[in-house]
Length: 96
Image 1 (tube, rainbow, N blue to C red):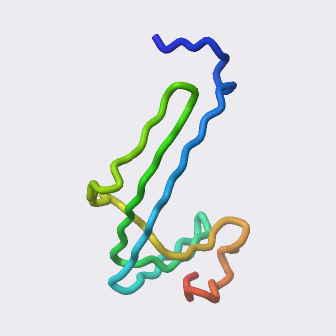
Image 2: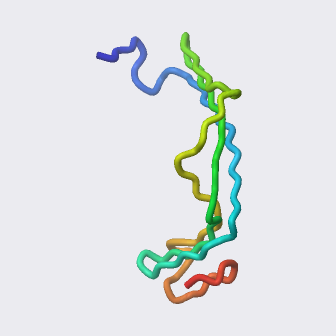
């Protein structure tokens, strides 16, 4: 059982992330009327990053030298929800 002296959420902690995203292979357009959505995304994308965290008496950090291949990454631009009515064409990506 995980028990702490301080109530949950009252111990100060810091988490840091550094991410690098790369895309290539041209872009593909995606659009849907329900829910309203339009976007242009790279056909091939990858992400790489490092992270660390500290809390009273505990710390962790990723290994910045270890090469890890992302299993999924998506990179592009999108418009959705109230910012894209179903009947309005996206001027940036040409989607509907």
